[in-house]
Length: 94
View: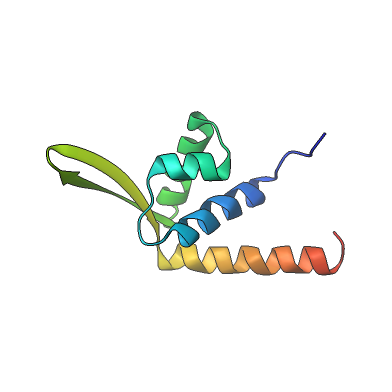
């Protein structure tokens, strides 16, 4: 049986997925890519947005409004630091 992911691993997964997907990402793509329930995803996205790591915006085309997320500069910096921490953990076998 696999271990549960830590909070920092989930945040890393969300931010890395958004970076990989490009400029704008739909919440559904984050939901599936980060393997989270809708409620947990909403909590993480709200918190990351409130802390300035993500920007949430909407686009309207043909009377349909779609929600998207993108990383802020602060979000890119956090992702970089989380990557470094992950590398240190792997290097020391933690």
